[in-house]
Each structure stands twice: as structure tokens, then as C-alpha cells.
Amino acid sequence: MIPYQLKTDMTMKSKDSLQHTLKNTLPLMTTADPHFLLPRLFPDEVIFCETAKDSQVLYTMKAFLEFCCSRNHLAPNLKTWLSCPVLTRPDQEALITAFLLSFTAKFEHFTSFPVTRYWTAQNKNSSMPGTDSQNKPDIVCLDTANLVDFRSILTILEVKNSTMTKSEIFQLCTQRAHLIFSSQDTCRFMVTSLLHQEELTIVLFDRGGSIVCSPFNIHNEPDTFARFVLGFLCAAPPHLGYNPSVQAGATRNLMFRHLQLHIKFTPFISVQIHGHGMVIWLAEVGPQSDLANIRPEIGLKDGDPVVIKTTWVDNSSAVTEGIILSLLAGKGVQGAPVLIYEDSVLQPCDGEQPDGTTYLRGHLGFGAKEANVPDGNIQLSKEAVKDLPRESMACMEGFAPRTPVHMLSKPWGMPITCFRSARELLGVIIDVLTSMSILKQQRLYSPLFFSSSAGLKQL
Image (cartoon, rainbow, N blue to C red; front, side):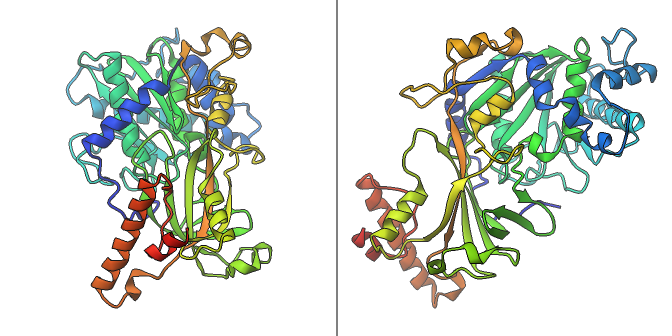
């Protein structure tokens, strides 16, 4: 089952787009120790969360590794995975997949709790659907209920045995993250990885930058490797980087403020990893909405169409699109969408403070503090650095502080099916493009969609 229908050609991945992504990723890169990052990304209470609900037993990673030793999956010295294949053999992707799947069997044996995800190398030699370009990821992880598709996979693990530089490893991980971000519409952050012979490199990407873990040997560090494998098999979607406010199912729902919104389809997904990361949904008002708390002049009712635009706003920006729409409405400008709400997306854990790239790094233990710097990046003060464990990072070059914002508006205009002819529709499209061109020339451009140039003249 594909989690949503993408009605757009924005999944096309041009070389220019990818090169732009790589160019803008490198300046916002942070390096970290995997032994520091992974226990915060996938702590024991996240991996063993479901098992702990129905059991008095305290499950821990240490106990799981001891169980693996007792089943001859791990050597008694806790230094070698006995079932791990030689990583330079032909068809190594299939062998490594079988090795990863053995963790599922051991986990189910250890906890008596079923695992509903799996690792597969199904598309190592054939293009995976979900994008318009030909891409063959080595190994992916996903839910058993979903088809193998870029729109449903949780992560990508590349497997290489040829000589690779650190830069080449990072670029390949970036390319894979780029494919997932531009194919999925609820990503807050994304983790990709590369197994080079016996060393695993893990990279976390979000809208503010990337965190690159130094490579580690999977045999010498069994705790870290098992945490990586089981994290993707067992952690709840918010811990894997997905927006918890979007409820999946037969109908995807977004609960925001007083509204229940049924997401119909996704017209647009940004093809860039870092930056605004804009996603646009077309939704309709659901029956559980509290319309009594919506301003009556908006005239919103059950079943009405709503445009949801999610943007990762630069924290240094004083003006948002919602503010612009409010100003247009206050001036009586016609031909612009009607703003319903604009507000920050809240953190997935406590649900009281805004989510964002600063929150994620704080959650992962980096403790970054904002500084007033010209490029809008966050840097660590001496006070912040001295409070961090030494192993937490090798360096912290900076990242862009961004906060996700939902903007809800009533669409302006009429459905394409209501136009009397293709010529009439084409005339409206030309008006819109002309208006946006003039706005750009006057440096007033914002992605507002005017129905005709008459609205522009009033502005």
C-alpha cells in the first residue's frame, strides 16, 4: 500500500537539482560519534517500547546481546557476529539482507513480540518505483503492509566493497536521502547509511543540515550495530523522522488546531533536502472539525477544500506567507487565497513547543544554542561545548535553525474541470505566470497564486 498519491511531476530528479543539493549540504554538515548519536536516536525504551507495555520484564540492548550469544548469533567475546556473511562475496546484498532478517527472528524470540517490518534487496538490480528516474537502492527497510516503493521505504542501506573516500560515501548517502525526501511528504528527518566492507557510516539529514557519524566496525561495536538494525525494525514512525500529526490509514488525516483535515493528494513536494522543504496537500474539512471556533467570515463548512502548505521557515525570517496573506486581506486585495490558520508544528514528544531543527539536535544531545550570525546558522558557544560529552562530536560547523509551519488556506478559483475550454484555462495560467514574473522583477515574489493580473494591480 502506497501511503499517498502524488499527482505531480516533481519526483523527477535532474542532475542540476542533485548537484544543488550536494552543494548546499556540505556547508551544513556536522560530524558525530555513532556511539553517542544512536543511543539517543534509538534508546532502549524506543526499541523495546511495545514489548514493555505487556510485560514485567525489563528489556535492554545488553540483555538482547547476551541472548544472541546464547543462540550462537554473536561470539562470546561480544566482538563478532557469527552469522554475518563475508562482505566481499558476489551477491553480497542478498546475503547481508538475510543477516539483517536474522535480527528479526532473534528479536521475536527474545521478546515474543512480532516485528512488522523487514529488510529487502529486491531492487538491487532493478529500478525501484516511486520516482521518474532509474534508481536501484541496495537494501531498504519498510513495513510489511507496504509495497517496495520510494514513497514507503523507511531507510536505504548501500553496500559497497570497492575503495571509497569519505566524500564519496557522504555523496552517495546524500543522493539516497534526496530521493526519499522528494518522494515522501511527511519526512521531518531521514537516515541513510553505507556499509563499506565491515564499516558502517550513518548520516542523518534534516531541513537544517546533516549529521555524519564516523564509520564503525560492525563486529567490534555489536551494541551500536544492533541498535541501528533494530531501531528501524521497531521504533515508532516519529522516531524515524515522520510527522506524527498526520494519521495514516485508509484516509490520511491531519489534526491541526480545531480542524480535522482529510488529505486527498499531494500536488507538490520540494526536491531539495535542506531549506524550506515545502510540501503542499489538498485536503477537505472532516466531520470531527470544531467549526464553531473558526472565524465566521471564512465561511468554512464540512467537506470544503483546504490547501495545506507545510514550510520549514528560517527562524531569522520576520515575515511568513500567512502574514502576507493577512496583509492582503486587510488591504482588501481580491484574488488571493483566504488564510484560515498559520501556526508552528509542535514537537512529537511533549506537543507543547514548536518542532524544528534546533529541537532535533537538542533531543539528540548536541545542546546547540542559537547565536546571532549573519548567515542564519546556529553555532556552539564555549558554554555549550564544555557541557557536552567529549565523544558527542568531532566538530560542529553549524546548521540552519528552521521551524516547520502549517499554513491553511481556502483555495482561490475553480477546479480545472469547470473551465469551458482549454483555451480559457490556458489564459488563466498565463495570467498567473505573468503576475508571478512581475512580482519577481519587483522583488515582491512570494508563492501566492493570483487568479488574474487584476489582483496584482490592486496589490
